[in-house]
Image: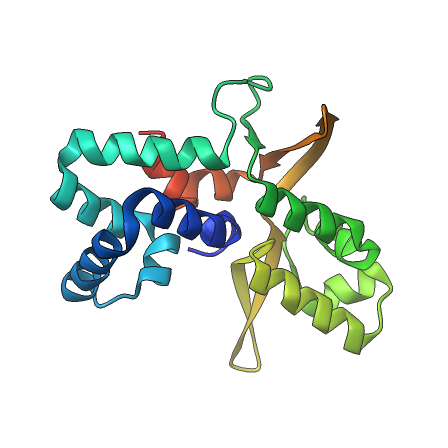
Length: 202
């Protein structure tokens, strides 16, 4: 699943490898391919499959403990922002990616234009007053990075034209004691479809 799963996958990869070591990862990779025909990287974005293999190797309780450790390395699960489902990210690499993205004024405009309702790429570029070349490049970069996801499509001239929306509904950045915490409020489809969060918050 694209979106938040993709955004956190690189950090999740590093955290799991630090916790489990090369031999265990190799064993997991082999089982993932045998069971689902998918790669290690794919399993980070389809976490329910990785969860299944972790349970096979470590049992339900062992897998749950490991997954909680992975979660705590990425998200600040202790502080509750409020009841609106804010997620506080404490991983520096993910925070850096979010801050850089929102620091790019054109990317920020694009994300803001699809926070409330999905649009096709042409509409996004037009709304943001961007040139075709720059607009398409920036939109595609945001899709690749996981900030935009396709949520629906319309049929025109027998072609599917996808509409995109932002995974983020709101954003807050807190800097205290030289530590940066980024709090995000996800759009509802992302709250329901992020496989990593679905598994670790069960």
